[in-house]
Length: 167
Length: 152
Image (cartoon, rainbow over all chains, first blue to last red; front, side, top):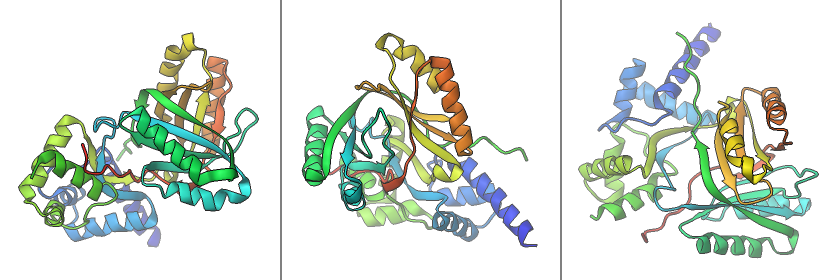
């Protein structure tokens, strides 16, 4: 019984992803539109969205800007070689800076010494240089080397797209 | 209210999350202190200008399987051709040229780690270049956007 319930729930979630992953239509009530598409009432649709968000399948429900079009043409991938023992504290500190959009710990490799990555964005080269300086100041002696890889061209950028499931 | 100012406020206020209720734009207008028609006009204008990427749910990539950040050190004269080849893979959803010895950076997403490894092997075979494979170990901040401020 519960298997059937969860299967129909999965199918609904899959439909919801297909319907919304490219963005909602700009209607007065986008959730009413979604409810109609899913053949649910608004309350059940909002509940489904809340559940998917609580489970972590939905990261956020938001107005997502195109930063490049807003004039934020400069993005720098700053990479840092941080002492492993300082990483939990410093990773959290760097990730909390308002000008950082992504901050991850990644493994070192033979040809790659940097283990902390933080993306910064700005409207000029000077702006992202100043962010890098600020991160360098925050990391202090715990960081032994760093670089900033500036993007010269975006060659491909798509959000997650799942292929449609045959029904 | 100035549309440019309204659009900045709208993004700063709602890029991390918008009200999850019936008629959400009415609630957004209430929070911003303007009319719902202004919110709609602003969203439409941003949509047409391309400054609004989209409005709606942002799904978690890692739940769809495995992913990694990969990089290649491509000789300058081959960069365009290799970049085009890499972008053709459906597993690649971001691909950036960057100024560095490792000058091509892309995110690979697939159903599982094995799938990612097969794509990396295939890329190595296709290009003769050894990819860096840098999967995420810990996330300290996951693309929640960043503050725009109100200065144009």
